[in-house]
Length: 395
Image 1 (cartoon, rainbow, N blue to C red):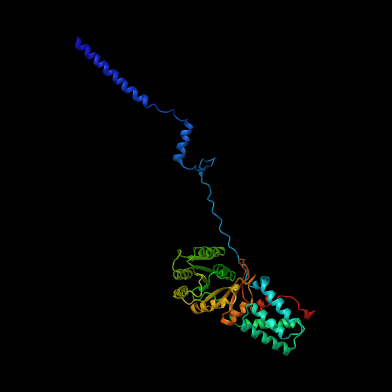
Image 2: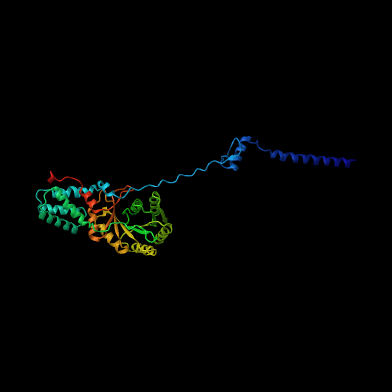
């Protein structure tokens, strides 16, 4: 009997201990009060659903889902460059500094009652100060002295006409100033643009593209200045304004390779003119000048280059002549573009370039506007330099 009692007590103890073991863990694992349902749902939607999506609208009468219309971005509006005919006449007021030298100073000297040796020396000094150059100045003054003596010219209008004739003659109006930009036998004309650092070359190159488009040419640009990523971006911006494609390569790519690809692309797309912008370089850096020669040779695998335009900063004066000479030796420059001729520039540099190099000035930059690049005409240019100031002898 005692044994049964002990067994019963043992079983009771086991049951008590088991009950305690089940209750205690539940007490330890009591959960925290649940969050409000709306907060839990909101977090779940944010984590799983992502940003809200506009559901398609349903047509009420049929219940058919109607997709919203696709809105296309408007095409960029292409600019229409200002016609090049007559630009030089319209921009004549930009030659303010040169007009002061030629129109007021020279004509004022010529209007004196007596043209003695001192007066002719002052005329020489004025021309040299205007960057005409010593040799050209002597020729102009000698011819003026002879003509005024022989013709007995006394009126202001006659003297102005004589001076204008001598300046036009010094600019050699017989030189061909046309731009060779027409395609031939299915191959686009190729225009290579070269120049020193700081001459405004890439900007002027973009303006040349506008000149070509204004004259009815389709243009493709080659960004062969691979040393500055900003140069390619800038050129692409200029081209995009008039619908011209730009071929460019990665930064520090071989400039000759980019130029070659640009001409090939121009052939494939059938454009009229391929305009290649090269990196600015100093004329005394032999390695860079050799690289420019390589660009020329590689491009000519497609055919001869039609134009090589040298961008000269008109404010550099006589220093620009040495630049032009070296570039001509390397890439056979066929024409000069004088940039920055407005403001502080001296118009006589045009005469100096013609006299020293025999290379025609084909375009002149007369301002910072997009269409302030004008085809050069000697008679119009001289007329703008002399202005319309009446002379005292006409009074």
